[in-house]
Amino acid sequence: MATTLTMLRLHTPTFSLPCLRRLAMCAVTVLLHACQTTPVTLPSGDNAPYADLSLAGSGAPQTQNRALPPVVPAIAMSGEVATPTANAINQSVPAMVSAATTLPVASKLQHTDDMWQRLRDGFALTPLSEDTTQGRLARSALAHARWYSEHPALLARMFTRARLYMFDIVESLDQAHMPLELALLPAIESAYQTGICSRAAACGLWQFIRPTGRRFDLRQHMFVDERNHVRAATQAALRYLAELNVRFNGDWQLALAAYNWGEGNVEKAVVEARAKGLVGRFEDLKLPRETADYVPRLLGLSRLVANPSSMGITLVSMRNAPYFVPVPIERDIDMVLAARLAGLSLSEFVALNSHHKKPVVIAATGAEVYIPVENEAALREALRMQRGPMSSWTTATVNENATVDKAAATLGVPLSTFRSANDIRGKRVIVAGSTVLIPRRSGVKGQDISRLVAETAVLVTITPYKPKAKRKSVKAARATPPKSRHLQG
Image (cartoon, rainbow, N blue to C red; front, side, top):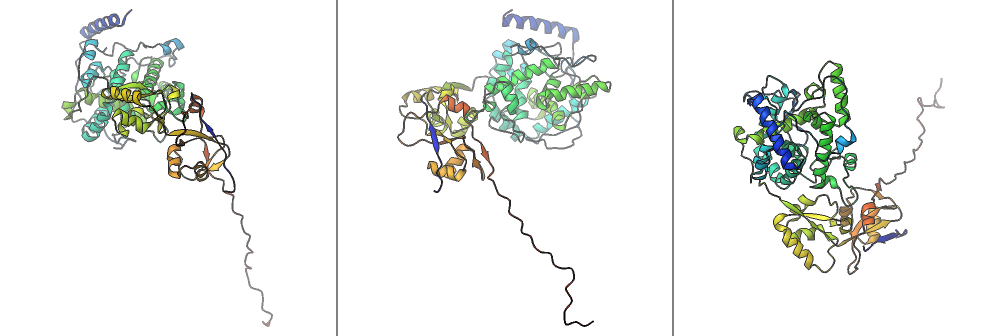
């Protein structure tokens, strides 16, 4: 090789809750006796007009129909959209239950073995009246419920994945006194897939984009992306939803629309609706198609879960019990090895640990891996018995710009391995100062990746420079041939 690529290896060792619930239950009892609201069932023959039967990511029906009184009191007709104080936003248990919501009954939530029943007992977003003559949102929600009921295989796959995460989500919602319909929101966002990213680069169960993830303290670096974390992302999503609920004066429909479209956009739409003399509720707003369908999709799915037999559906069984537990990692370990020691396939392991972006879990960052409850003891014992290195990876820093092929060859790493480990596709140039992941040298010890490297490492690639080809000048042909000297005339 005419030019040598210099690499520097980095390897460093390195009032109580029960009382509040009783009071709330008493208040709800008084309200129910005073109102005596009778549940209304949507007519089975009421079909909303479909503009399109394919919604990005799920194929669920889209409709332009959106109208129903808010689940909880909407923003007041007069005055500006309320901006919450910092204290209101930072409350760990926001006061978001109103007279129009049903408080979960603790005994029912804690003493049922069926997760579906626990969800139903905690549903609080169902409108007090579902009379379809009152608004288009009810018809749209029913259309979505029917669509899901007509796709039982899709529903079964989605809720089979949900088994892994549902208990943890519901526990978090209960602790925050939030409606349990929100546990179904990942069905709309990601179909309960932790490793999925959208075309807009929103990732994880709750589909956080990078700036919003950083706003809610989700770590994002070369080795970890907590937007894909099964627990951290859920906690961040509930904080965000609680903030939005406070920001929109307890109107969950507006809060959910803001979660999908952004609070600034929804606030602007509310102002525009009020300028037209409307109240500024969800059904009054001019919304993009995806956001207009977002709330009715959740309400429709909630309706199906509330009474699946009425729609000819049998839901997959789901236990009201923890599915996974964290196990701390004290030394770097390959994902493949961790899965094998836990008695899991790699895909089963990744479903709970997709926040680890590389094929290795870095211990120095305080890493944990999430494991099914029944596999915890086996993994802990296997980790205790491991004596040698558990990771086959380390890092290197590129000190000068280099093509991917050149970097891999200089480091002695097979090109396919190098590309896969560093997620590099196509013809790229690695920028000087970038950190790359490479296999450890055989027999070399003490190379666990340090916390400093893990949390500050950056890999930057650019398109190779292609000089523009010089244009060749060509003399234009003469319009008329010259006269021949032999012609007379």
